[in-house]
Length: 386
Image (cartoon, rainbow, N blue to C red; front, side, top):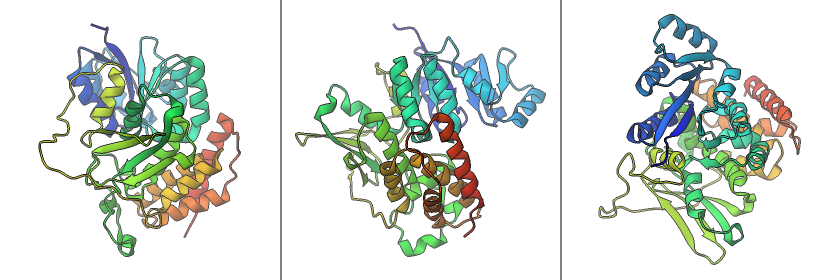
């Protein structure tokens, strides 16, 4: 038996965190949780620390930290710290083997880079990490010799299909997309979409932001950019197909025309377990696809006029430099404003397009330039009025 892998979970109270905890419960003999972090949900984080006897915890939000201190909810054996610096320190705990980064948005970049510099393997559950800082993350991972293990179902599928195949035999990657909850809704009816409607996904259980991203297919745009960095392919060799059942998670096409795919039910536990136990495998948390039960698998090309966010992501990827960072920041603000009922659903891509057209995108930005671009884009997107 190998010794237990020691896990740090950043973003423990979100949907990815919840799925990760399910995997940890199933494999207590193989995995040990040594550090957890959350933004502000201190009561939930405290419960996690009790259940898994976690020695180190971080709350990013100062107000939540003080409430936690007053509540006395955390076990006495858990050290609780606060803020972004504490988050980076948590990611570098000497005893940790792998850091699962599920912090939403750009906030995950600094702790991820700190973990890489400390020689930790990274389980990537934060699209924005590579969208914002792809060049820096990939360079640091190569320099430190650490593994970047993708927990997005699409990238994890590609990662599994590529095992044992030289890069020069790869033709293209095909990412599948559910098409979101408005896949079959006529475009003429999208103007009436409300936040309540946009946060109900037919297949996946996710947080509100990523559920809206699924509806607009901005999430698939982010995944295209992520795939570019993870697998080193130019935009012309990255495709997207709509697959309503969310059973095939991606395809890999080789130069001889052969295509491999990875299949499993639409649950994040499969990809998360694969990353945390890699290169080992073990029985899964939940049942897998049963081919004795009749079902169909459908695929079709996306309609870019219905999903302009996907086209904007392709454009940003082709522009390169800081353009993907602008796309990401503008989309985050647009979704926040939509959920707050400040803008309409169809104004999300318009706000992204406005930001991409107005912001300067340096071609070889430093890390600080990327953070500055991110900050300036958010301010621009927040101030824009239709």
